[in-house]
Length: 249
Image (cartoon, rainbow, N blue to C red; front, side, top):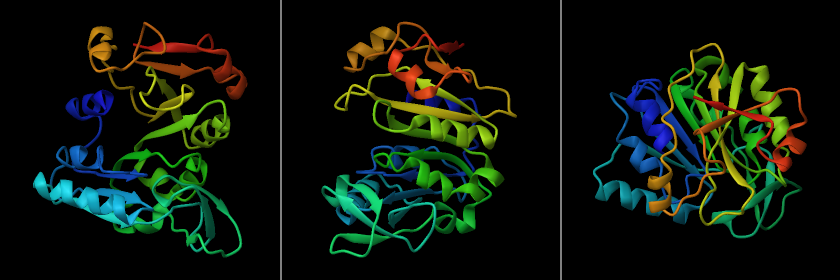
């Protein structure tokens, strides 16, 4: 979150461009980020759980935030795909199946953000391992807006390298955020992707004392982001540790 604020503070992300927050959960990012936006920019707060979205609506009203569009949907690479989910709908893992009692029909980010496709400044994706399918359904947004993209991965379980290669095809540089996420699996990491045709933003270094006071922990004592080496197998490199990364300063 500190990095995102940093990007808006230095105008690296245009506050007049909208945000997609998919897997928005209870709106802990959506509501806060909505206050950073200007003019007719909005936050698309997307989640499969109507209960979660009701909570987001309540929090937004209490904070006088009106530029959030709540979208009850599951996104994939194509619209109209039947998806089944494991677990509860508010924290589910999805897969393509024949129609069943716990199935939902997919949409795509390109379809949802049709009217804003050329003006998306940030995409935040937290969809329990379904990130690749979501990105494949956002190709128009990626091609026309080249937003900053943040996504979460379980690096010992998800095929992170496939996402890296996909984003590199669209001329993105990908970095791992130097943070162990409290309350999550120890292999849970957030990654951030920047348009490689733009000059990289200036990211403030991690303040170790501040992090510890917030019960947050860094993977390493230096730098805020790590760039992935492009010539080493991603899965192996991630499991081995940080030796294949360099600091972004």
